[in-house]
Image: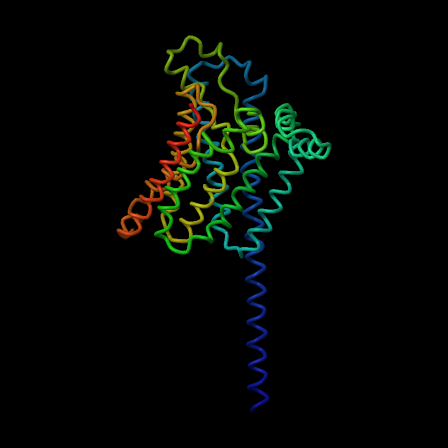
Length: 342
């Protein structure tokens, strides 16, 4: 009897171990499958953009209004593709170290593929002044394959780091204050911080190293839309925001992962942030003198508005804390603006 009981216990242990192994194998397969699906979605979109950008397509006699519609649709599709990729990865159930490994692999891939990083290393190793290095990096050319892979690795790097970053938020009530604060910090960084300093000396470094502009469709040919009303011509210039960068991908994934973690509406979050990024594209078109635009206010704004009911749960102390921290940052932005003009 005891021997039979012992055999049953051993059988149960073996079954449990087999189930655990199968579950782990299933999770691994799901992770690889979803990442591969993200790559496929991106590749299909990129091929379509390359076809639109080709000389053969752009010489076709297409009515100006069609070019306008095409430009708007490509911009929306670009944002939707990014959101699909981000959502697929954000919904994966991974250990923190797995997320870190994927983030590191993506970042290393980005560094190895982007020739600007190699240029920086070579010049820095030869003791070339930093200002000269930054200037030289603006003129580095990229091949067709690099145009395809750089934005892909950029998106993956930002997305996996964003998913990893979600772990610092231990309760849902912190999401709203964090969204407000990072948006204000982004405004300061773009107009008065590091991005502003680099952009003044070498704007190509920002668009080449930290943004996904190589996958952007070209605007409509001027001759095809010259007869259209001025407002429509302005709309025809819309393209995905060229300077959407790794920081934006980090926080797109960050907010999406939080929506998954805290059972917020994924659909509403996707729609909200998609509208936010699209509005950023419109701002670029409407205000031609803007070289760089902080993306986080649009991304965070879309996320916050999409989940308004969640923020009603904030306590009075949490509202006060958010207001105080935001006020301090706003004062810092105002001071930076005054100092930059003096």
